[in-house]
Image (tube, rainbow, N blue to C red; front, side, top):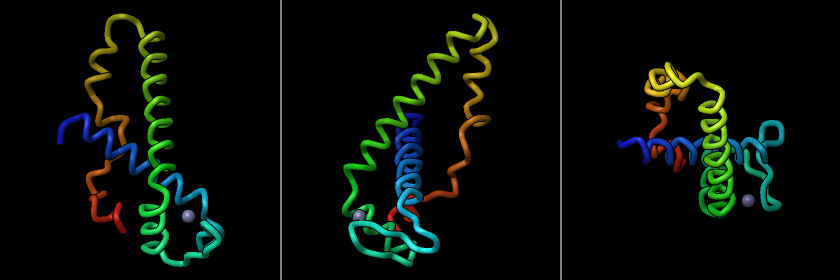
Amino acid sequence: MNLCSFFSLFHIFQSFATFVASIKDGTSWCCCGQTFSEHSAIHKHVAKSHNFEIQQLTQAAYEHLIKQLEEEAETQPPDGHMAEAADISAWIPDINQVSEEQLRR
Ligand SMILES: [Zn+2]
């Protein structure tokens, strides 16, 4: 997986999780006038009916990240920040366990 698709997958997963969390109501999820009590059911519903929202969230998350990186670049001393930027695994959560299979559930 190249860095670009890694970031895309990471942001889609983050946005998906954010959206699902935002409609959680206790132990179930309320969405579009329906109540879902199963993880698999709400994930299927969101994937099927809320593609547009996920894309919007993904875009917002991406822009937020770019802004953060730009701000960091401005506040960093000119030397030394390249080494930190290269060590990407230190600040990106490990999503190796998150398969596409899980996203579709
Ligand atoms: Zn819905």
